[in-house]
Image (spheres, rainbow over the protein chains, first blue to last red):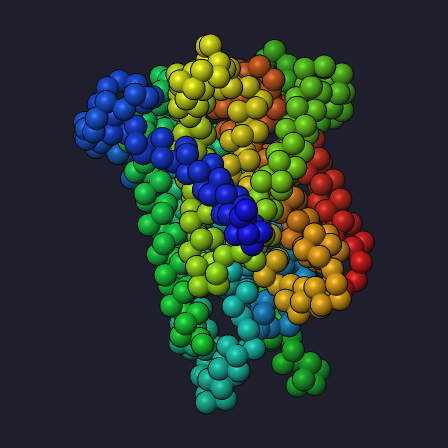
Length: 265
Length: 289
């Protein structure tokens, strides 16, 4: 008879193993059949080919949309990171009346679905006579990313940082110097992580981009329109590349934060 | 005015100045659009444009039209089901990671368990479509094993939507609950064992109650994000039983009825607000630790 401890360990291993199979199944199928030598991304797997990646890299519309996504993502994430940091700094280091209310207002967009945010902007821009554009999408992504950047920046405004800033002030630094030479460098790793997170969310965001664009679209919107043609290995290849970019960014943010954690210890 | 008062006022002005850009962006591109949408929801679409008389007609129509009420209930049902299933799937994983994986491997095991979280919404749903399609991996396996004669219809059903959602949110639950379980003081668990509680009893009377905040947080996030999502039900669920976000985009895309879509968005927001209040209550009435 199997000892009970071994049986229990095997049971937990099965729980974890089953979960890994569940979460990796769609990813594995997506990636595997992006190399499918055939026209359908379903079994049987006919052997590897890079033809679909060639097709993706030769697809002008897809590349243009990818570039649009990069521009929208970098722009909106940079602004979100900067504004989030400034707001966190202002509220943490100064006695602003009503700061709890301001804090709540800045975090509020997190509780509203992307669809509602996109629709609100669509209606408002329409009423103001502003056309659909990538700028409108960037504004939408700024709205969804600002609360996250604010929270990430606020989380690292600790007493240790405050003492360093006070020391700089005592040594004669101006408010501007305190901000740019002390507070900002201290916050830089968290801000980098916030930027990466924002960019990932913007890079993947569909519904706001779908509502606020006409002809110049972002990558998820093009992939969405590719879905209308049904299952296609080219879509697999494009999806695999999109996933790879997200993973690189997350890994980058993780590495910077991990290094910072080690340095702090 | 004495100097102390003046100093505190300068301090307040400085702080407000740093926060001003973020506050302005939030006011102009978040709060204002919500107000505009609320106003539009009180107008009505006519043949030639929009009738600007204030009326609750859209809301009356929403709750009077069975297809639209059905969309609301489909949304509630899907989100509630997804929340429960994600907790049932994700909690044991978090527990296994926290208590049954050697400490040095935990971080790696956790990161691996939530890595697919970073696939984009659209791509992830498409990937599930590949898995669940009539000639996809699941059906070919079932047929190969002789379990079914022909393909089982999973794609384009609510089951597919729930499965696709669960994939995403079980990872979220695993991450949140893992963090909650790691915060439990291990001495409490040892004390329970020393006082004679078995593994099951320790879990039910110590571990589980102490992880209630993490459960509430992840359940809340899952419910709110699932009920507001358009892509997963649109790609995986098909057009048979629409959820509210699908019905909203239908009003805009096919019917060009912006006032109605605005009213429905506010209904969606109200539902999410109620969920927020319930979640707040649930975390507050929990016994003091």
